[in-house]
Length: 128
Ligand code: HEC
Image (cartoon, protein in one colour):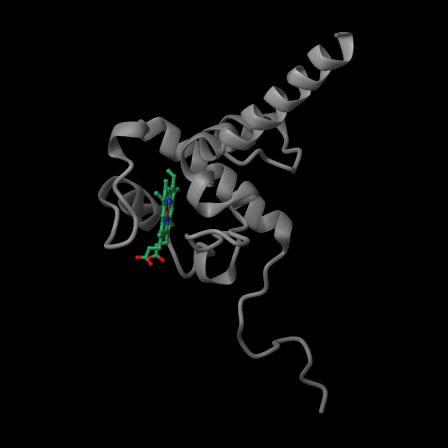
């Protein structure tokens, strides 16, 4: 009887963890980026993946040279979230302006940590 209870508890735990689908962050960030990390995983990670890496997700990873500030500005991120696109529904109803600002801060921090290289000619190797 005891074993059966245990079995039921573990099965329910597994089912619950499978159905609560929002991916969890895997990285520890400094306190000032924690709010953005939480908001990102609440609203965006279902599509953009844990830590915004977009592995096996329907939406692109945002920790990518394509989305560095030089290529994709904060305003453009804001606009994408508010207006959406053909493939991305607007998130206007799920998130406030200040939460978007926190998310952008968190994304910029994560991009920096990932040390992404912008593709251009290598500037420092000119001794030929
Ligand atoms: C329901 C799924 C979904 C959610 C939720 C979602 N996105 Fe997206 N997002 C997408 C898809 C799909 C694309 C690719 C859109 C395209 O190619 O037009 C995308 C594209 C983007 C892009 C790149 C746009 C471009 O032009 O390359 C950014 C930036 C972005 N999303 C940010 C966010 C942020 C920040 C959030 C959370 C506030 C979020 N998304 C929530 C599905 C989603």
